[in-house]
Amino acid sequence: MNGQIRLLMLAVVQEQDREEAARALEKLKMPVVYLFSAGGFLGRRNATLLIGLRKGMEDEAIKILQETCKQHIEYLTLPLEGSPLPMPTPVPVTVGGATIFALPVEHFEEL
Image 1 (cartoon, one colour):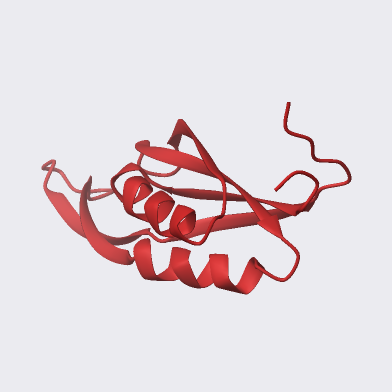
Image 2: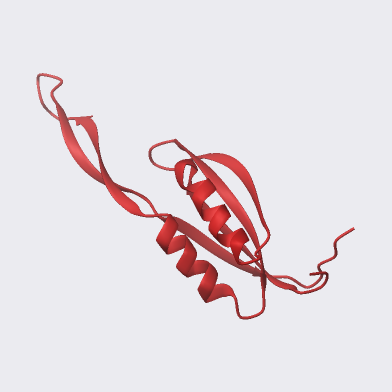
């Protein structure tokens, strides 16, 4: 595989989706390293996948991430503004999926 990596894809996914996504990518011989992270609107735990891709593999990697990192709706309870009583109101929030970045690789070497 030395020298074949042409693109580094970074995918921020929910921690619960990390293992399934990494396994599916590795089955197609896409090297994956992950880093745990946190943040975003809900402050949830995430994982950032670093995926090495050969030329022409971007669409296949994105398809795998779409299949393994599904979006879903969760409800947050927020206090009503201007209300004399602190009555929390459930607000739907879309979570999950993947945020993907792709960076060209000028040099790749395994030592």
